[in-house]
Image 1 (cartoon, rainbow, N blue to C red):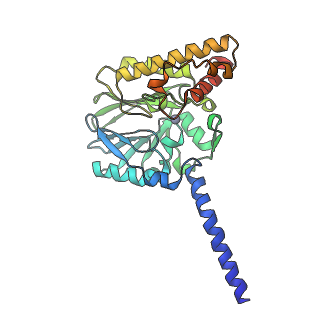
Image 2 (cartoon, helix red, strand yellow):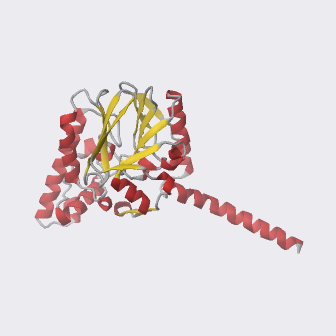
Length: 313
Ligand SMILES: [Zn+2]
């Protein structure tokens, strides 16, 4: 039975080789292959007082680096954790002591499991932990996200706001309900005058608003209204996605959202279907400035229409 043993071994090897890429794909999320991450370059930009913006693939990362250690905001996708760690190590020999998740989406929390292995304390709004723990479905992308393992979950959660006193900074973390999701927070570095908005702000592009996680366009507009008294024309603003922004960029973004809200609301009030609204191209004057991101005009209208048609969210 010598040859059947070889056949069995060969069969196992072939099945293994066939399954490996599937396993890798499933682990990393269906929309990204391993090579997508191999080519990603992680770059850091110093803003003020040891605060950095770090870009790669996924949500923009914020870092506060100083004598106490490293305070980190969001961690992109799991396959990028080593590259991100290398960039942080080049900036500081001290450990990442705190890691805040601005919300639960995987392009902001994918590195949680890796960073928790370094004794980093993960902090987030109550709803972020609940959503990561239970697994999620995003209707707009027809995408299921399995529950995160226990060691990737936030260990400190809050419901309204909290303040860190770290690296000579006063770091204010404020929750805004039902904005991009129901677990969003913004992080304000009061001394450095830097704000990280999470995905409440997509700088220069139409945003995704997650209806499945109780997001709303009105909630984003309201969140920006609330944050305005805390910032000024010199504030450097790290958006969830897009380039570094400032006060004028944030106001311009809010104005765009208000315009879209009014126009889609009018269509719904007039009894128009999504198809009818799209056919009228109601955002044609906005597309040049905002339509260059990952959502086309049609997709963005579809998302806002779906949010607003039931209860004007
Ligand atoms: Zn998001």
